[in-house]
Length: 397
Image: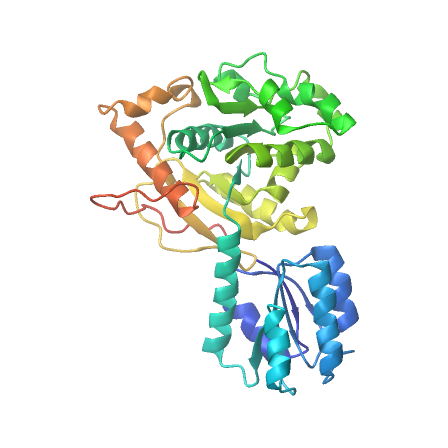
């Protein structure tokens, strides 16, 4: 969760920073003016501030005015107000509660403070049901395209009556190979949508008209393909944003192959705007090193690393007990995608998943469904015996 910390209380700041490393702390501030500037730059999801903040210190009217300014600019943001010197009367408490503000009085017991922060985190997760998921890998060849294809097939197979359409979108314009694996060699959907985007007239109906079906399934559509990859510089973030927002309105679930290159405008747009990022990493030094380097660039690119869930693509023999920590950020490892060999094994071979004589493929499907359940993308299944994930963590530092 993107968080601004503005308390002018060093001891408290230290405690929050060290005990809540799953939050993305954008700035530590000590004045109202700095905080207002930071709101426009970062658009945080949580603001923690206290009554000893400069410019509003010990003045409840100014503090309530400041809260109203924040709520007006960021109505969906959560606010935690820490009172160190001010005490609210019954009427003032009612006003603060009506604004939806969490508050706590000094001294701040760690247990109570943590309960409030975890509650805010849970509220955020409940609101953000991941309907758009970007599949990304830190370097080419780690399996982002293969995983995006597999995830979309599983979501299509497990869709409910309310989920009419499932979309698979390819924003990897540097290597737009996904269409060939789907047997849609002539697909240039992105190019065909550009005139409508330029005219501001792209609608879900037009999207449906141009998006071909996958494996002859009408409710399963593909958006991807460009005519000349070598001219990728002609595409811009606005175009991909419009395609993404239209897809969000139309598809019940959208899976985006984001590719890997951070110089790809399609990749950056997908990672910035998706509800969830599934990072596919191979258990080797180069892949882990690229992952760590990419995460260090995410803040400058406007990508929230807290949206990342990690999966390992390739079979791992033994359990790894350590956590993934990159620059103070703990990344959850969801599990392993068993190795199917080469990507050729999955091309046009989705029915292969139904073959009970192929243990490797069945294991792959089971692991993938477990991962999607953990992400909230599919409804949990009833299981006779719950599988344990082979990997709980991966040290990439």
